[in-house]
Image (cartoon, rainbow, N blue to C red):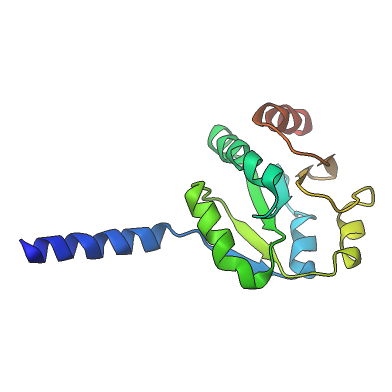
Amino acid sequence: MMKAFCFGIVLFIISFGLQAQDVEVIKKPQMMQMLAPQDNSVYVINFWATWCAPCVKELPAFKQLAENNKDVKILMISLDFAEDIEKTKKLLNKKQIGFKTYLLDETKYDTWINDVEPSWQGAIPVTIILKGKKRIFINEETTLETLEKKVKSIQ
């Protein structure tokens, strides 16, 4: 009986570890490559942080968008500090966000925000929808309906 219990605990721990969200730390050059995709797919790129309540509130909309649109590539770029990566992973696991997430390790925002979008003042959440040369910039908290409408308009 005890062996079965211990075996069950080990399996639980292993399965939890396999489900853990992977967050890759990147720098500005990698981020800029993401903002210039070479294929003709639709990309939805969201800039967010765990400390931003509107950002966390809209996470389920991106999850639902991914489930409803398998051909849309969703990339999350966290602006949390690199030393807080475990906090970022924990929140993503809690919200069951499974798509690719990056943590931008660039704390001097004024050195890259204008390169992302000249009209961006730096507030988050921000979402950019890309397809080829087409680009939609959403400089506010968004909803699933807005995301789906914008994705359809760019296809």
